[in-house]
Amino acid sequence: MIYTNLTNKAMKLAYDAHHGQLDVNGVPYIFHPYHLAEQMPDEITACTALLHDVVEDTAVTLEELAEEFPAEVIEALRLLTHNDSTDYFDYIRTIRSNPIARTVKLADLDHNQDESRITSPDAVPAARLERWRRKYKKAREILEQEPAGQKVTGQKIHESDSNLSIRKAVPDDLPAILSIYQTAREFMAANGNASQWGNNRPSVDVVKADIEKNQLHVITEAGIIHGVFAFLPGSEPDYAVIEQGTWISDTPYRAVHRVASDGILKGIVTLCMNFCKEQCGHLRIDTHENNHVMQHVLEKNGFEKRGIIHLSDGSPRIAYEYISA
Image (cartoon, rainbow, N blue to C red):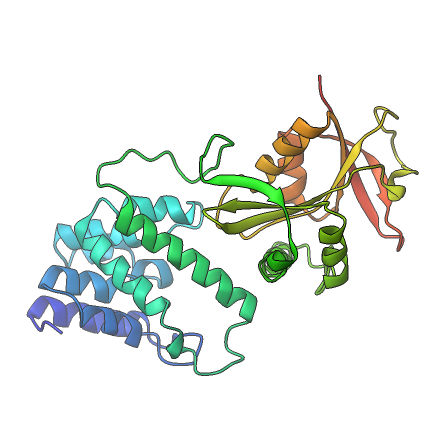
């Protein structure tokens, strides 16, 4: 640790701000910024490391910090503070342009990736841990490999992206696919939709069957699976009866089911839908009334709300349909 009047001030402020906060292992959170600060080469980066989570995770504001610390520290802290409305990898790319913020973030990633810190086997679910691994690995690649000054357009994906591909799932993909579905269930539950997939849907047997029938597809980037969806080759029995509306057409169609993303890349559902549209101009899909995110994305992608269908267990779902012009 570099001890100066400024770093001592940052140390005390961070200690007070993070007081009572614990990490996933129940250890006082303040040890994390202290650990980062011990690795920093100068006073400014040490202060930035000590304060790097203060604005994001406590009631302290940048304006308050600006009254106590140099502009270089404040600018780096501004970049290091992640707003939930900003895509995580867009945030990482912005950090890349600032040497102080970049140095602190690389140390932050190293410490976050140190799984020896997780001494309790129940502290972090396996699916979440795998998610963290992929997320931190990609963040480090961006910080280390993306050329300085390169113009970036965000992490929203496009079909022209050379590293993205869609292929049929194979049995070896099962662990990654199940992890993505677990992520989707957690996201649904956190956004008021705990009942659509509950704690175990789609089941392992359903996923295995989708793979065996060659109807499950995965979206990958550089070999890492980020999305999954089932694209059924024929009609869906649950769609035989529709209430509170009608289907647009009775012509042959294909159904899309079990769409999920790991949350790392934006635009997974849109990419999925564009792929399916290329294969068939008549598509049907359904979703839960509480799945407002999926409803928004479907309508954005040209699907029309047609009525209510019921699954084999009697559960109602909102039915959507797409027919190419």
